[in-house]
Image (cartoon, rainbow, N blue to C red):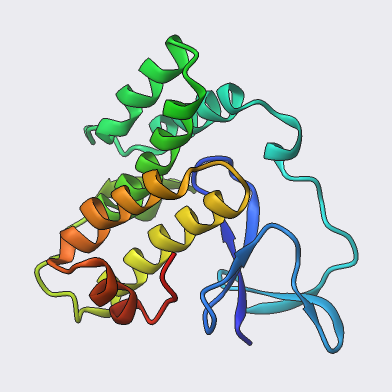
Length: 195
């Protein structure tokens, strides 16, 4: 099964990610047998009949930003510092700067994906600083985190939530640069098409 469900760390909504093609989408994928998905956490394949509305369909970017901030802060383990993008996103919300909100939502996803791991503690999922060594890009966990952050940005671009140049800049600086690669090398490394 190539499609898995993933919980968006900012909105808490479920989206679908194809581990073979690296596509992501909010709608359940169609297969030869109908609508179905594989839940990575339970290991079960479930048939889906209808798409549930996604929060972004009805809410403003300011509301989504506030929810993202609250969600990330609420997930931090005791004593864990928040990602720097939280403050940047709060500032963008305060100034009602929608373009900056969109950019900082993605930066928050990137920082959360790359610099934190999730653990189960006391019946809830918490964020803790990662011990992952990004100087070793061959570590499959590094590649998985990079793929996730990159595909999330592509999905934001597809949905019109991020401009191509802004996405490219963040990908080159934060993702590709984080593992010492240029854009084309990074795309080959992730086995993903260029944006």
